[in-house]
Length: 480
Image 1 (cartoon, rainbow, N blue to C red):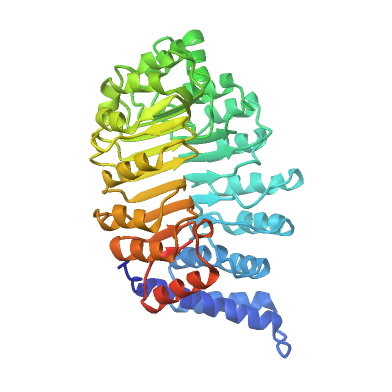
Image 2: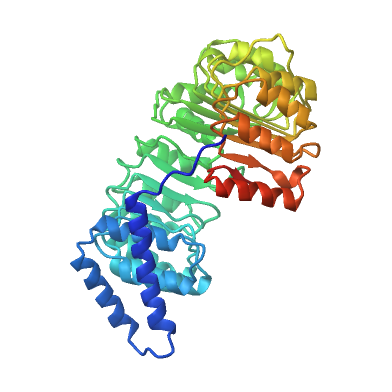
């Protein structure tokens, strides 16, 4: 049977109770017809109450986290709590999503009260041009920022303010469609944070909205940068430095994402990135994978490729050491048994839109595979069943469409010991009934979630019955 729900910790219960008390008090003051009190005075008194209780900066921080992330509280209530709880002792703030009418007010509060912030995440706030002066003021006042997340709103002036004021900044998210130019990138790369930055999330997936020569400025002047996250043309930036500035250039990049890579560019990537652990190649040129034959990686992701060329590469040292492999839009047949022989250390395997997958009963099995995802791949049901029966240490399993019956569930999951399986997801499984869910519940002791049941042959009454049984038994299993 699946695991039971764990007992809520005393700290979590106390935090929820305190957050409830604050919210209910403010709600009573704002909405009770017989109460006429100034909300500003009430907020001061509530803060005095918290101080008398000995509330630490961590408690204020946790209260903000719980309240701002609530799906049930109205925006006005969440904003009022932000006004009341944000102070110079709070180091971590994620604003979450608010309606546009609150953007200016939120920025004003952070600028006035958030000087102690080390981590600021504004992903739910879309700052308009006429409100950017608040953003500049926030950066000027929050001089201890270590992580700043401001996607889709950055411009050159904001980068200039960051360069002048944020000497400790390590993580910067300025991704998405922005007004950044070479001027702003140059200021950032030569600013106070140049020696501390380790992660810069910039650009948009698959779009070169920022020129590779601008990205080269970051790589050249920020020696500790380990990843450029979203940017998809890192190879071109490295080749620009190698060809035009320093042929012996080395950087600390551990993750590289490149598009339309040819063999010379890939050779430059390997030469300039001695610490490379994760490589994502989107639409590599035919034959370029030869450059990788003597290199080891932990994670490899490839999109729009020829399966035979990839398998040829994996016969080299890279295959033996690879831990995570993601394949997207592969042409040709991928023999999973051969892949298991070439990559015995794989922990995660993701196959998306690979032309065909195959596996024979007697073939080699993966010894360490924990995560498997197969989406939009042509694979015979018999091959898939044989493969799963030989991969019983899985923790996560997702297949978009299966023809399994309840008897198949018995032959796979009851007759084989899937003792580690936590999540199972079949998007379309029209032959599976409520019996399949019960069998999985009984035979997989670590199971935490089963889905997507809307694509199974279950009626609303079946779902209600099982959910009732799970709730009455205090089961932690989630039906999705």
